[in-house]
Image (cartoon, rainbow over all chains, first blue to last red; front, side):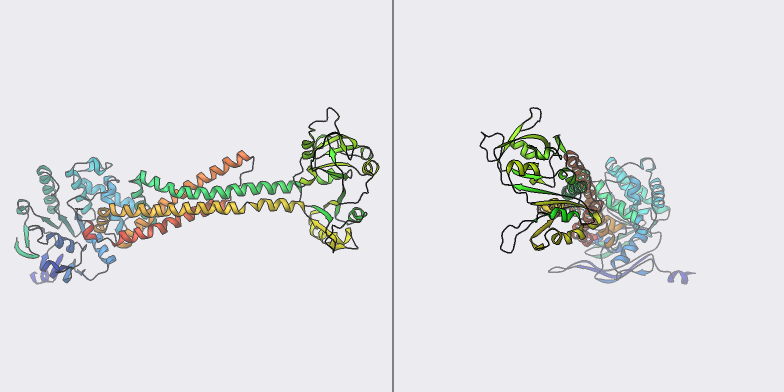
Length: 232
Length: 389
């Protein structure tokens, strides 16, 4: 049994990943990252600003390319793929939550949440049905026809989380999801992330908030582009 | 991606910035409206002239003497009208002779009025399809008497607007009674400026020699060209090359084409407006891309490939321009309708111009959107999702 598990590919695996920004001198944002995340994990990535944690999240999210090393998502080597293929990986396997929400102000909540499914070729009716379900999961089913400007910061981030989980992605990647929120709303969002994890979502959350990271089952610590601690 | 989805995403940017979209579309609308109106108005005007020509008839020919081999004005043989009447498809032919005589309101008046005195046959008016404003035309009886019929311009210049007071005019010093005033003859402005007396009266009172200076003839429509070809030989067998044959309606048709230069100028102006409108669209799209970095980053994170982003902005630009085009077609057609109505013309806006205008607007939008779309597609997604500092 245990031998079989060894052969199963990890949900995410980075080997000797480097990301050097060109310039003189070149800036190494990531210097040899080895990281393995299994399906169902709930990982916090912490570190001071400039430690490379956001770069790491962008590389994992295929928004940024590593300059060296390999990365597998759901068994597929993605660092060498074309833009179109990487976009397909994002549509299929990844859900993003950003510090500044990035909602479409002119669209209602259902269309906001459904926006990503269009790039998977999902028909409109199905998109909206799944968006309503996702909004229900984050407790916003009573505000479907509202637009983002009518919502509080905490509610907006819940919409963003609904958008991240609507496609049942392999990973939810969150970059400082509580960075723009007050303490009350932070608690609500943290609770929601835990709830979604309990329902089976795999999550990687970048934060500089030590208290928040302490609530996560696994915590990866970064410093100067390296992983300096991995508690689980 | 489905066309419907692409359109829905393309309209998102327009819907969320309505004011700016409207103003940008107006730029295109003005150019398209100008072009549609120019085409519509000139086409309505041409349709009007052509309808007028059809009404006047294209089966009317005119024969007159040309120049002889020494460059002198030639003359037609006296029996030319009779010869012409013998051509089978000629349904009517009538001659006029001009006389060198002065016309005055009365013997005491000394006015240079540049009016011609013509000797006319009784069937002149019916051959030309002319109508009388007042009175009667010359008939067999009055042709022998000192009576005269005035062309519309001649009547005006002589100051005779009514026959109520039995006005007379003095031709070469002899008094002639005015029996009729003609309506204007659009194909024959020279007759509008003439006073017409009977051939017999001319011989008797002006002691003039009657030599036909012009023969008007009606021809069965399908034989116009054939008759035209033989007219020279028929009218003057001795010197066919000294005969000039023309079709008066050709002159009017030519007039319908005269303002082509102006039309080209206006279309040029419309095209300039259109190009300026296109540059406006490109400008607004570039600004839009800069402002919407976050949206582009988000869509890239959601799984949009570069071509999806490019398509979104291209669709947006094309839609914006097409909306302007539709608006412009509406405005242009309305302006044409208003103008045609004011001129009493029949409205004639070529449908292909309307369709083509919208296609041009669409293409313009695509061209204007290319650069912004490429810029948006090239945004680095990792940078685009980062908070703007």
